[in-house]
Structures are given as C-alpha cells and as structure tokens.
Length: 75
Image (tube, rainbow, N blue to C red):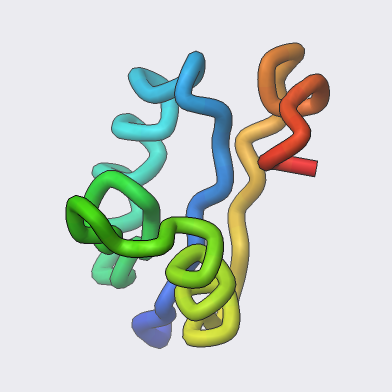
C-alpha cells in the first residue's frame, strides 16, 4: 500500500503547464502537492514561504527544463 506524502514541486514559471500536469498526477495518486501557486498568499514574502514549504515537504520533485536550470530561483 502506497503512503500519502507531502511533495514540494519545484519548477520554472515557464513550465507551468507541465507542472500542472505533474501536480494533478501526484494528487490523483493521493499525495499533497505543495507549490507556489497554491500555497503562497498574495503579499506573503514568497522566498520565506518557499523555504517553509520545502521544510514541510517529505519529498521533492524537480521539473528540469532549460528554463529551470537557467533560473536563479530554481537553482
């Protein structure tokens, strides 16, 4: 039996479409997906919140693409 996990999804905003697909797949398989668009409120300090989400996650998924490897935020 598979256990439910909190998974932080790291991706470049250029890859939002693919990130949405990955998030849906993980959620359909019973996991909680943590990511910026769902878990950071407007006006919140996003860098601090990202750090909190990563610390709260049990696992991470990195969406590797040309945009993400050239992004100073994703590195």
